Each structure stands twice: as structure tokens, then as C-alpha cells.
Image (cartoon, rainbow, N blue to C red; front, side, top):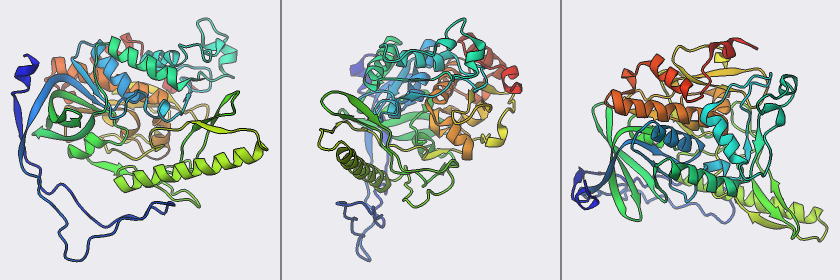
Length: 444
């Protein structure tokens, strides 16, 4: 169908009562006055007129969010022959890893010398240092010393600017249809399936017809709009890694309020922020910027008159965990070293040596929507296990698993993930290089 003909196709959308003007949330951040609440008896809703939206195009797999999880999902889906679209609201890929300057690609191993992440998880690690910024630890190269692997974790640090360029090149080369500056808005459903995703960008508001969807938004935005049960946290802290320059050298400053190991606990002595509320997101960003100003002042004082300039600030909010799916399986800390028959990948624990977690289909797949999968930090995990699975390497694993499952479902089961043969999916992922091995889980 030509693009001209596509523009003549419309979906009828009725959006009633969409703008809630509820009580304001005081931010407590300097130079940010709290909005006034509407006076008693004032109108608290407005009605948006029903209107027809153009259908921009159709695709087999739509991935929402271009962080590491979204990139892995989109590339995996496209490599499996699916017509794939990736939408990203920013103007670069990588999410917190690149736009947030969180430049540590955490371990692909269990800390005991065993590699537990391969496939796209390893490919994206190697891509992150493709520019030669830092080497892969020699012991983790082919034929590396097994004894040294027990002492050295398989991780790297990278240059975020180079990684943005390389991720974009990978996505485009994989024939993924990429849309920057495009915000997810809503879904249209037919029974237990998402049939279209509504987006908004410079072209206006439009619909994308879909067979399957991967929610890699980081905040379970698709899940929330599609009627899935979700869980939200208000325990995020001000955090924003940034770079300084002294006219001679660029330095990374890892800047964050202290946060608890268990994300369900409120941080001590500082404000906790939610990531699924507009006022809270703005408040977190403003608190982070104020913390950066204070840190710069201390660095300048310590430099004793020598120049210290802010060089590169984080360009996205530094949320760790915000809102996630409540799936059929909720991954918990107690699932360490437990095998799941529907495992689609593995991960170690970046915080300590020893733990290995399976990542089952049950913690990726939607419950209310049979053609929806999640990837990244919004998968169904809780407590300490949520902290384990939110990081770069695990996001790549869940992204590859979700993207592959979505592509196979689009081709073989009319998009329905529940009808996939799990053993066939697992074997397909193994052929792609992913490690799904019961012995790696039982060992240690």
C-alpha cells in the first residue's frame, strides 16, 4: 500500500475526560513553585472531541522505547524477519546508558567465572567499546584464563557519544523502521489484543497498526494504558551522572543520593520520587540539577581556583525503577538458582558474585493482552530481583527474548504469545547464541 493510500485510512478514536486537573504536588525544589489547586467547585475535566486518526503504517512488531532493551528487542525482531518499528521519544538510542551517562556495562558473568549472558547481550557489550575506548577484559576473550575469570568480572565502561552512534547504525542496518521524537500515547484493543498504538510527533497524532507490541518504555507505559496490572514505586532518588572539564581533561562524576538495596524501601533522609507522574518526574529532574550545581561548587572549591566546568549533563531523568508489569510470574530474590521451564535467558547479579536468575516468559508476557511483551526494567520482578534485572546486560537479554518471541508469534500464532511452543522458542534463542542452560543455574 502506498503512503498516500495509507494516509487515507483512519481509525475512529473517542477520548473523553482525558485531562485531569487534580490537586498539585509540591516539588520542594528551589525555584519551582507548586501549581495552585483549582478553586472549590471548579471544573476538573474537559472533553476532547472525538476525531479520526490517520493510520501511519502497519508492522509485525512495534517496540516502544529505544533504550538498551528496546534496541535489543527491535534488532532481534527484525533479524527474525518481522517488519519492525522502534519509537523513541528522545533523539538518541541507549536511554540511561547513553543519554543518562550511566556508562558501565555491568557483568555478563556470575562472578564465579561462568558466563551467563551471550547473544545480543554480549554483542551490545562489544559494540559499546567498538571505538576502542576501553578493551574487553583479556580473560574473557576466546581462550582466556579460567582462573582469572573467577577474579575478573566480564564488564566494561564505554563512551556514551560513540555508543549512541553505533547503536543507531546497528538499528538502521538491521532494517528497523526508527522514529525519533515520537511519544507513545495510548492503545486501541480488540478483546485481549492490542490492534493499534497511538503516537504523537511532528506529523501530529496518528495510529500504527500492530500484530505484537514490546513495551520497553522503562515505565510500563504500554502496560498501564493497555489494562495490565502494574506496580509503581515512589522510592527513586535524585541521581544524575555528569561530565566535567578543566580545559585539559574530561572526568565522569557519578552523582546520586544514597538509595536502599531493596527498591521497595523509602530512601533515608531524602525525598523519594515516582516516575509515573508528570509533577514527580519534573521534581526529580530539578532536584538532580540542584544536586549537580552543589557538586560543581564543591569540585570548584576543592580545585582551589583551577577551572572546573560542566561538560555533559544527563539528558534523561535518572530513575532506577518506576512502574512495572505484574505478570503471571513475579521474579523474586528467592528465585536465585531456580530453574523455570519457560526460561528465555539468564542473568547474574551485578551487585555480588554467585546468584543466577532465570528470566521466564511468564515475567515478560502480558496477562490482559496476549500480543504484548515487556523488556527491560518494567518486566515482572520485585524487590531485590527488580534491582538485579533493571541494568544494561539484563535489559539486553529480556529485549532479545521479547523481540524474538514477538517476531515468531507475529509469523506463526497470529501474534499470540500464549500459543508459542516454548521449547521451539528456547531452541531458536539458543541458535541465536543466548545461554539457556540448566547447568549454569544449578552450578555455583
